[in-house]
Amino acid sequence: MLLSTFRLLGNFSLRNSVRRFCGIRGGNSEQSVHRALSDPSWEHLAATTGSSPTIAVAMSGGVDSSVAAYILKEQGCNVFGIYMKTWDELEEGESHCSIKEDRMQAKKACEHLSIPLVEVDLVAEYWQNVFEPYLEKFKLGLTPNPDLYCNLHIKFGTLMEHAVRLGADGLATGHFARLRLCRLSGRLELLRGSDRKKDQTYFLSRVTQEQLARAVFPVGTLEKSAVRSLAKTVGLQNADKKSSSGICFIGKRKFTKFLEQYIDPTPGEFVSVDGERMGKHEGFELYTRGQRSRIESGGRGAFYVVGKDVESKTVFVAEDRDHPSQLSKGAFVKELHWIKGQPPNRCRDSGKISCDFKARYLEQDATCTVLGPHMTCSDKPTKFYPDSSSIGLDSEGISYVKFEKPHAAITPEQA
View 1 (cartoon, rainbow, N blue to C red):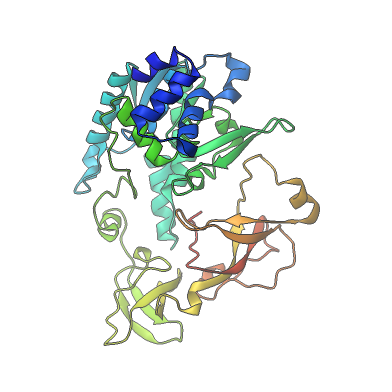
View 2: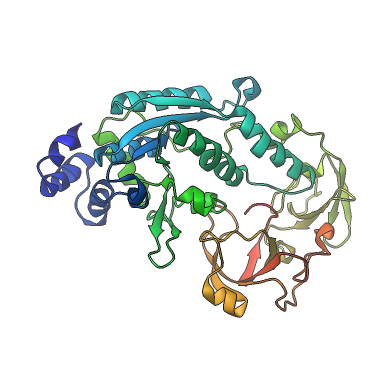
């Protein structure tokens, strides 16, 4: 490999090769590429495995995981690729989900890097642990995010277990995220990727400390543009491959058509926030907060979903996207997951903690205060989710996130 040759000549030659062949003209980008190549992202593995761990790379067929594999090999790790199949082509239908293309790209990348590739069939595990719960939550009127559960149960769960059985000390992915070992507690901290626009820690927010102990994120210190430049430098064919977006098993289909294949939508009424009946809808499961409704408004403005009632199958709507009913002062939350295994000391001492929050991927960070169970809170759940009226800080295990400024379209199960 081109950079391998330069690396033998020392760091100065490596830096010049990165600048010349990646098209990077000095500054922070050059430094981040050099750091990614020279500073191992697997230091937390070295304590138990020695200086050259064996690392499996979850090859998605995309450029990020391919560059992750390249970086690890350059650092002297024993590397092999592992491709997980999570969706059956027979279920693919009209989705144009890129399963075959992704598998082919993963194979080509591994061949180019001269590393073996192992394919693991996790279709049954994915169906049981991700897809079936995904459908069940929709039936309850929620809007789940399957990527959160896929990372917890499949990628850093079953796939990681397969990798370990194959001899790996850790599993690397192309996530834009970083890890830092806290010397005082001996636990790992999950840090946002250096490229804030591509940061993917949102999708890793449910991963456990035990799983992070074997996780490796080689591209976490890079910007996306640097990843693509590095891929071109080493001749990876997927250097310009478009980044995946959305949910693979839905593909290019309209979401409603996809969902109708697996559940029987329950019809009901559209009701405005003022109590006006606005007509019939074809299925309350097909709507989520903030979504534009299909109401024929007769010359009035567009109506947007502000909530749902599971019992009556009512979909509540308001005219205008910025209607006050879209705004929330806070959110009642359950199952708080602390990456380090327990709340920070200041939270345990006072029962609350101020921090930033993100209610969905690609949102701008906002400021909030997390109030622990049994803390005093005057805010009440929205009346547009009547089934949640019994929720409060007196409920077992329920915490409250108080937003510094009202936040739009907070949607149950998105985080």
